[in-house]
Image 1: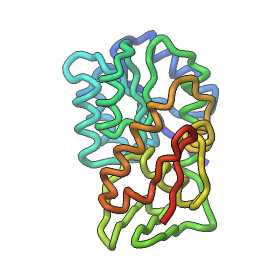
Image 2 (image 1 turned 30 degrees about the vertical axis):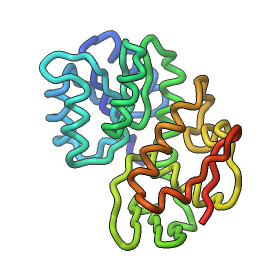
Image 3 (image 1 turned 90 degrees about the vertical axis):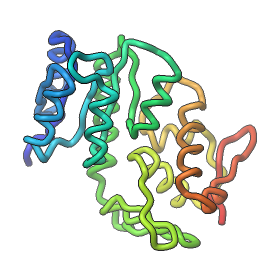
Image 4 (image 1 turned 60 degrees about the vertical axis):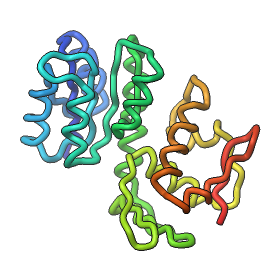
Length: 224
């Protein structure tokens, strides 16, 4: 089996080497880029990149603009790295379709765990590949969501969240349970991450967003 390719984009060579070494031990093939412009060139030269680790602050083209350019053509999972821990930055990342958001300094082991978690989901094979409920249809293999026959554009995390809700229809799900199953790693933070994604997901679903009900003091429940 060919090694999965990961594009690591950071203007600090020491940071790239650190990430490359840890990912290499896990059996990944790492491609490096020192800025956003180089990253875009490498991304289109290598059509089989499975995931991108993208720094925010870089010369020539920063991480935000790089993400925007890639998102025009691809839903490849993106992990954003930043030296800032500003909530506005995190929200902007989610708006652009970033799948994970990690503040520097970070544990390389945690980064690798998150990479593995995302790639397990993107390469997961399920026997039950079509989910449907009241005009909502999910094709898990093709990664397509349709509402009343019309395709809606979801980020990777929004897609996984909706799948999890629909697979657990009628069950009250705590935020902790959602984090453990959708994010698939030990998450040390508050509930804003889930709440932000649910808000975006509801908005994109239009009237069908009402099926995701808030259970005060607990979490959420998908109910039609």
